[in-house]
Every structure is written in C-alpha cells, then in structure tokens.
Length: 115
Image (cartoon, rainbow, N blue to C red; front, side, top):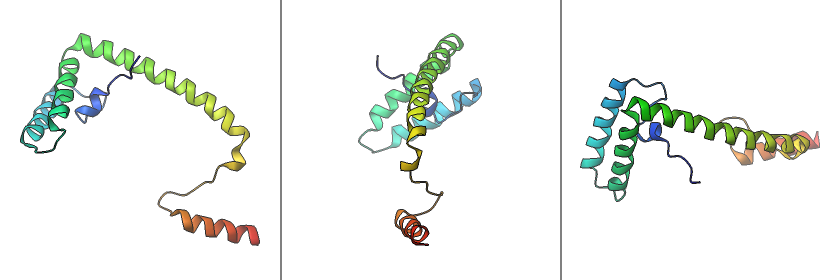
C-alpha cells in the first residue's frame, strides 16, 4: 500500500486548520503555482488540488484524518521497535548538539578521550 499523501503539508497547514484557513491556503498556493515557471509546478498544482478536494469536504477530511492517524501509529510502532534495538547499542551513537559541526565534535571527543 503506498504511503498516504500529506494533504496538510501540500497546503502548508496544520491538522487543526479551519475551513476558512483551508480556503485561503488553497487560493494562495494555486496563485503561486500558476505563476511559477518551475518545472514541477504543474505536478505540485495537482497535489494541491487533490489536497483541497479532500480537506474542504468534512466527511472526506474526517476519513483522511483517521487513515493518517492509523498510518502514523503504525510508523510509531516500527520506530519503537527500532528504539529498543538501539538502546542496547547506545554507546555506538554519537551525540551532537544543535548547530554544532561534525569535525568540532570529533576534536572535542578526542580531547575528552585523551584527558
């Protein structure tokens, strides 16, 4: 089964968006894509139109949200299994801080090791 497309991402919305927000986002995205000269603009426009068709209808949106939630819970289960495996090998994982560069972390780790 192919992955479910993320319609909220196509319209650059949160899953809690109101009907008015969906309308505005659709208008904004279609205006951008119709005037765009990018090679994939036509394909993106089809994705945006498909997303709008699903999200503007409350029944379709409810079904889509249910399927999306089920898909995310399946993925969370797979990642939980992976986390269990990784917990055993935690010493192999190199931690980095946000915004740090790899070579600086390597030098710092070498310094810590030699101390």
